[in-house]
Length: 367
Ligand code: IPM
Ligand code: MN
Image (cartoon, rainbow, N blue to C red):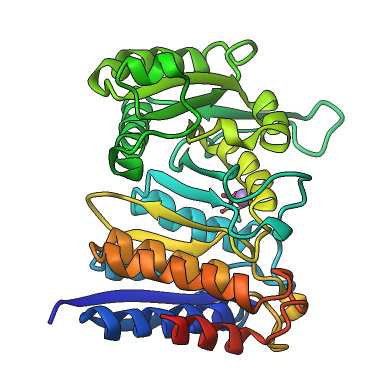
């Protein structure tokens, strides 16, 4: 039987609670589809840091590198200064394991969960491919004359041709493979006539950030001919924010830099029903990838069995899909949609009509 070894970092706050449900549903999928999952837990997070002063020992990175996938609950602890765990665990893993893609599907499962009037599941179904190793997150810059009236702070966005190209290539591939060649309904007749089946939008700010996005734009245009079925499109990041609200059906696949990707995916999460369902993957196609619910550790809900585990469950579905168990990934999503449509009152924490563990049970049973 095919066996997968997966590292698990439950993390802080409600992270461990949603992780348990994601593992429960994954186990149900493994039974149904005939494969085996071996979970390897790691206790990194705020509690360990407060107890031992250790965030993530170097040896842990080497140990985690041996896995093809890591499942991460959430990091962030109310007694730990903001930034320590985020940079020390999440960003460090993303960077050191070269998870250069942050893949965030945005899909509305049920009309009532969308805050936008007149939009339904047929309007909100796109994927954001966020560059995950460079840009403003690279940490370039510094402070001069700190704590004086003359203080200067510089924070630079790093964009390498290699980093941009590998991100664009991944995004073009996502677009090419989407819906197995069935044309996206947002295409115009002339696009279809030209052999296009999907659309990839570059999200940037070429009118102001003329160095960084000049590189992105040129690289995008140079790569496009290799993907003749993908229609290319460009939009500024501010306009994308407007259109996510007004015309989300205009988007199929979006590729963007690290900072813009961070911002637009929070907005996108809201139009798909909130952080209760939004999931993501930090992907290194040749190395160790890490899957996580998009939301944080929501410490105030810890231990109350009220947090929505569907985002973590969807992240587990993405992980199984990534590992090559595509039918299991698709079945998890279908089971989640089924219980949302038949049982769940609201996707918000505490308003689901069920507890965290019950929602996990329902999805596992539906599977
Ligand atoms: C995310 C989060 C992280 C980010 C934080 C926690 C460092 O907001 O995964 O989007 O900014 O990337
Ligand atoms: Mn974010």
